[in-house]
Length: 379
Image (cartoon, rainbow, N blue to C red; front, side):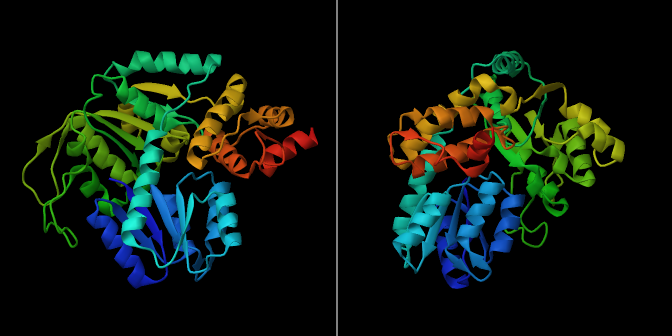
C-alpha cells in the first residue's frame, strides 16, 4: 500500500483529498506546516508528497531544498493557487516532479499520482557496477540468498541497503512469498506490539478493526527492518522474544500464531558501540547478525561512478522525457573527483536535477550542483 504525505493548511481540502485517496487504496498522513512535514519525512517512509506551495511557515520550495540537502528522493507534487510559470520552473528545478493548479480535480489527481507511482515502481531496477567491490558484494549475495539465515546490512546512508535486501529476497526460495520493508524509526513504543503482532478490534482506543501485524503479514517471506538501531530498548525486547519463539499474539487476543520469516536488517550505526552504551541488546544483535554484508561507499567504487551516473541519466531521461546522451569531459572529471558523502542516493538526485536543467545533449559543469562542480574547479 502506497503512503502519501499531504502538506496543506486548508484542513477541509486536506481531509477531502485524504479521504478520496484512502478510498482508492492508499494510506495518507496530513500535516499543515513545513516544520511538521520535515518531522514526518524524517520519521516515516513516503511514496509521494503532495504539497501546497504556500504554507503558514514558508514556501514548499524551502522543503524541497531541505530534502535535497538530506538526500531524500521522494516524488514531489506541488499544488497552488498561484500558477505563474516562474513558480513552476523553480519547483521543477529543485526536484518537484509536477505542478498542479487549484482547484484540483480528485480524478485527475489520482490519475497523475498513479502514473508517477507506477513509473517509480518500474524504475526500481538497479545497476550493479563493475568494480571489484561490487563483484564481491554480489558474489556474497548469491551465496547467502539461498541460505535461510538472518542478514545484517551495514553501510552508510544512501548505499542501497533496501535494494540489496530486495535482491536477497528475490534470489531466495521465498521469492514468491511476501516482502515487506519497514523503517524502524517510524515504530514507536506505543505502537510496536500492534505493528509487529497485530491487534483485535477494540483492543485499545483507536483499534477500529482487526490488524494482522507484520510477522503474520509477511509469513513465509522476508521482513526487512531498515535502521534497526532506531528501535527503542523496549521494542528490541519484544522483537527478540518473537524471533526466538517464532510465535506472536495479537493485542487483545488469547490466541498465539506461529510465523516463518526470513529477517534482513540494516543499519548505518555502530551497533557494537550501542551495545557497550546499553542502548542495543547484545542478544538481539546476535539473532539478527548470522551474516554481515558490508555495503561499500560510492567513493570506494571509483570504477562504478561514471557507470552509475549514466544509469541514473537513463532513468532521468525517461522520467523527464529528455534525450541527453551523457556528460562532457569536465563534468565526468568532476563526478570522479567528488567524494559522494550521500552515496548513490545523492548521485541520483544530482543527475536528475542536471538532466532537468541541461539545454544541450551533454551535461556540463554548469548543470551539476555546486558541491560536485566546486570540487572540480577547486582542483
